[in-house]
Image (tube, rainbow, N blue to C red; front, side, top):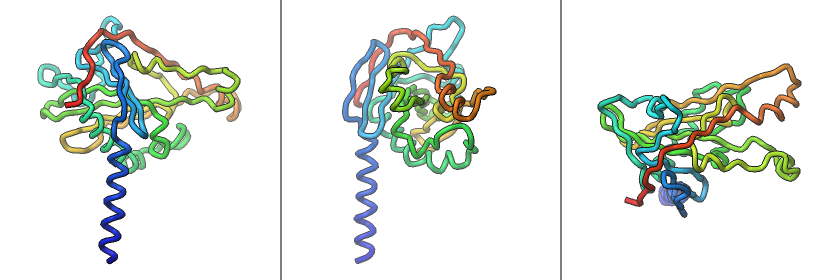
Length: 223
């Protein structure tokens, strides 16, 4: 009887996990980007030929396992994004605990639904499918919003986001769809000042953010 109950609980947990990582809607927001929304996450998928138009900048340098002449970019499908989210939501708790994030901001895995994602796909030198996730979240308080001091920024839905500081409000990780593992987990640093702790908490909420205009590409598919 106990085994039956345990099996039922496990099945329910797996079902909830799968539903949470399920994309419920998507929309092309530009020729090169598709916005996706799940019941507990949101993000934008950039296509395989996307690259921020910044002169000599090559977005491939962001990918830790990318090897020129061997690796290739691909546009993650809806199914691949859902798999990447299931792996992320399962593994990040254990992975981030090995990182010392004290003083860098919020605990990431406990507030994961608050982070928006930017997804890019590529293959490793071992021909494994990797989904690179660049994540960030809104740092302003509800009072800030009510006073309209900091309107919500949605530029991340169209352009790749590079933030120079901001602590654990901004991070990146690579999800290996072939092995089901995470790698390359990195969290931004924090720019401290001479202000008091209270002032720093409020004023450090505007990190140095750069957005780049990308080249147009195609949108994602379900298959």
